[in-house]
Length: 252
Length: 198
Image: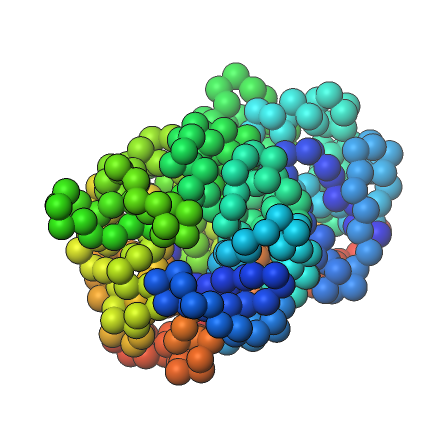
């Protein structure tokens, strides 16, 4: 049986790892290569690197970062942030990514999912969905451009569409929970995992191992976390040992 | 020198990085004589069965690969590379594979999440140079029956499938050793230490 995965996430801006709250107030959290190596040594199952650069120059620097991280990494590497075309996806794969994640550009032009999946394979096509609960429309509303643009799009319907178009995996981030360390958004996770037959990575809000147990019970195949690892509250290994004690069959 | 066959559809940066870490020199090749002559040859593969076979036919390297595998020279086939050894695949009806092993590659049943993405247990059923361990998989198709005369390992994903086969110094794995942490690195290291058969 497949093992539930623990995935540390590095948000990278201008060659450095940063972390914020609700996608804002980014603080420096270290070197991407050093952190990648450190998390791998602790037993991370995979690594996600997200490009949160504001400028084009920083985006080009991102390719160097991916190359350097790849040289040290013998676990899968997913890279996302600003992937706007099949060319940019291919450049990231050539730099050393194993999977690419698409977000805003796929909302603008959903056929991008089809073309990446057909050309590069479903196994490397990750659709990242950022969403928050909308009280008025009574649905989980998709946000793009780092949470600044609210879209007239329901996250559950969007995940199903991504599946139909050939996505291999969904990276589901709760804007409400990102960086707040108040636990994953379980209602959103349950709604999305019930609606599509793709592996879903839960993201946004992890603070404790109990939060991760809840996410796996809600249907997540993998959990992503940044703050709790960057700030040294837990090592990946400590998290996995505790999960194993609670009956979650992780890779040790 | 490891000759990595460049079928154009594979993402091989991770493999190259793995060999760099093992300080094993590699080069990309599309030439039949290099495939025949290299001490170690790697047939990678991420992508589609039909386009990989089309490239192999266009480069006229089918017989170089098949002869090398039959003679048991150190050859490692990864993911789609393993599937290409079969005679056919449900992914591309009518497209002949390399035909080194009998059988058709099948799609995972719809009861499973497809593609299989993540870490799963590999259990050798006959003795070999690697022990059971956790490996990273990214595949929608698989081999169901062990081919005659080959050693094999199985993995469970909605029932057992064949996750690796070996014979002489030829090893094929459905998983990605280059993405399977220390266990995968060790497998690659051991494969590199294999010598040409006398």
